[in-house]
Length: 97
Image 1 (cartoon, rainbow, N blue to C red):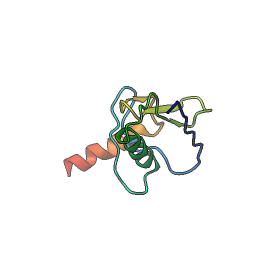
Image 2: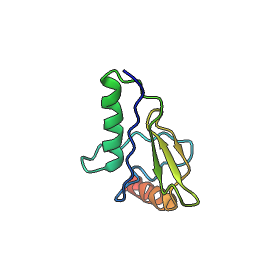
Image 3: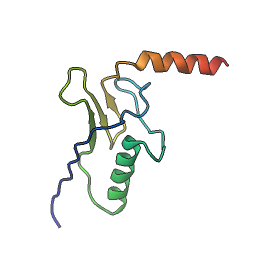
Image 4: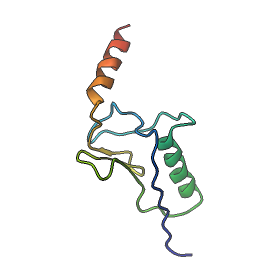
């Protein structure tokens, strides 16, 4: 037994629940092809296997100004996606229908 670290750097469709903003909780969409949810499930499985997970995060656009960070242990999002308002507007119209 000892400390280990898993690092994945990837490019592709990411950014689950883009309507959630800074300080809000991101639970996930649970789509089978959602890379964010796949990472969340991986962390859940590690924890169920009795591994002590001290840090698990997704960094969206880590080298860009306005990067968004999702804490996979607490669900808290730091930062907001640039198109967040578009998603919120769509949800408002969807709710009225």
